[in-house]
Length: 197
Image 1 (cartoon, one colour):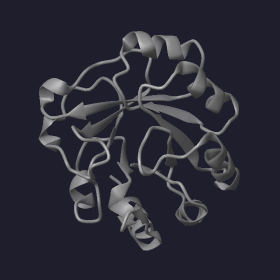
Image 2 (cartoon, rainbow, N blue to C red):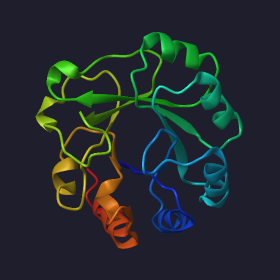
Image 3 (tube, one colour):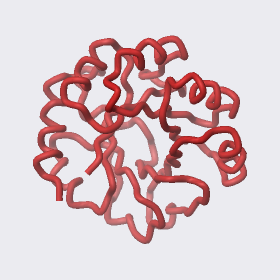
Image 4 (cartoon, rainbow, N blue to C red):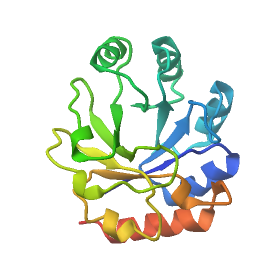
């Protein structure tokens, strides 16, 4: 089970993840309380353990902005979390050569879509960033590996690990009062590593 800790924005956050080494971390470039600038992300990436891959999270971003971050090696993977369609994905693919994640907002099983030219899905609730869990029973018949996101925390991590997901994506679930909590990050990573199937 892969682990992605999303929404890192402070030097302390990098220190926390470097200690426990999740597989991925996320830098949010879209408007959000966790948003980072190009310069912030560049500085944070320089201090990130080389074994941890950085994912850039974008919402309906211009292709040239994403391309610049990839070429500058600030991010190792791209996560599209907006209304990007297949044409957008195909155009982006001509510009970047790194793994691509497409987020899908789930309210029911009818929301599941299939995209070409991506490597992973990320299944999130209808309100991304809200920390709310969607009905995981909606998950079925996906043609690519997926990250499970949306409201995963220490309270439900055992249930999440029972899902047929390739990885989990956690943000607010390892925060206290809106900032990353070292103890929660350490405990979540410990539980996932010990609970791998």
